[in-house]
Length: 363
Image: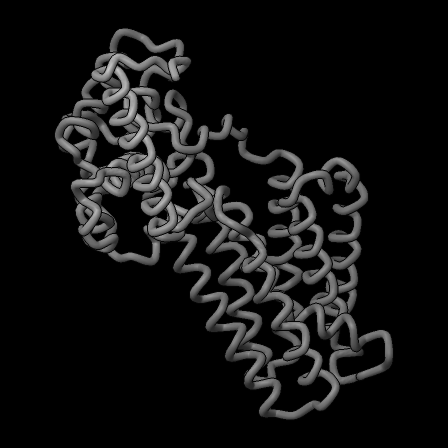
């Protein structure tokens, strides 16, 4: 009875959070909408795992149970919205959630052990992979508050989902509810706080901005910061440090002989990048564009150009290149070389006309 009261209290607490904090403001943001869906999944979980209704399957419990067991999908969507590459396309982030809905629906309606085991296994795999992705991205994340929150997020949210899934799979009926009361109320409060007070956003870096423009765009630099910016510019433009496919912010800081936090602050707060990989790829893409536009390198394979510029494989290079230019590397090269050929013909024609004494208006 006490546990049931606690579960209901937890659900009411989560519902209260939705009302008190205010949905209209947060729903204007993508993270607010993702958080709302995450909250609803958590509420559904708290209700459907209550001891008195856990074994039942009345009509109103079906959508709650489906939503509850699809929480791994919204976990991925929420994490990728907050921690993922903001410049990348987002539809796939919701694909996992969409895939979980029919999977959870079959398990709920059929009651099959195979279906439930499949749902639990998929949840464990998806959440485990996403936790690893969030933690792996911490090193390249230049926003300090978001870097710290990655640890909180994976521990507070991911581990609770993993634990309750394993307990539910083991058939322990009361522990999931207890875990939810102790953990998910706090987690939902934390996520809601992040939804209404997101990390301050920086001005987006202009597409195809490259070379010295990156450094001259920085404003309000102190003398010490200007010196660091110049050393950073030299390392990237002259020494081509970006060609190291394993380049990381700590390795670059070591090369420059500066504390890592100072380099992070320079690239993030002064140059306007939220992610170290985006900063490095800006230089790699500049070199790739120049190589693809060079007639002397027209027979050099695109893969070779990508590897020379610092990419470890062709896939990430193709995606980054198309995201920046709107064209594949092959399309970009074809158009650039065609433009060069046309310009070359026009220059030869103008030179011939000048030699013969003709003018554009002469017969």
